Amino acid sequence: MSTASLFPAQQKTRFMDITRDRYRNMGVRLAKDNLAPPFTLEQLRDHILDALGWDYNGAIICRYCRHPFGLAQAAIDHVIPLERGGGLGLSNLELICAICNAQKGKMLPQEFIDFLNLLEKHLPYARVGILEILQMHSKLLAKLRQAEMLSRAARNGGQVPPKKGKPGKPPLIAKIDEVF
Image (cartoon, rainbow, N blue to C red):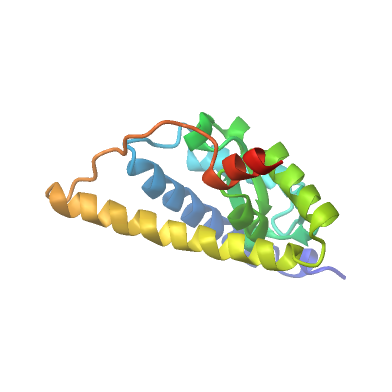
């Protein structure tokens, strides 16, 4: 017997808690650039529940590593990163595993797939180490962004002005394009 039939109320409560937290975190990140999600929490929940097969305890197969994961291990990824011109809407969001999300960074889906294939073909023994470094790099960049945001807020009386910048390829992808 599956746990889905044993504890449906607890699974729904857990789903509601996780999705509320993810929606709140998304709003905080977007607010740094004076943006807000163009969808409601309920619309995000429907989007996620659809990906989970309308089962609060459902599983998803990551499109990159092909491993199954549940909502607790999921990351809400912008398919086309905002920094690369991607939209804020639900059509630009997908659930992938948190590990691949950290490794993917600002790459487009095909760039990340090509990168994984390149590693597998040319550096199979170094692949895991390189992907772990990407994951650590992603976490360090997140901490750097947070520090920059706090610094900007301190300089502006608690208000965080939007960042100025233009979309482009992430430095790693630009370097790979140069080499290959």
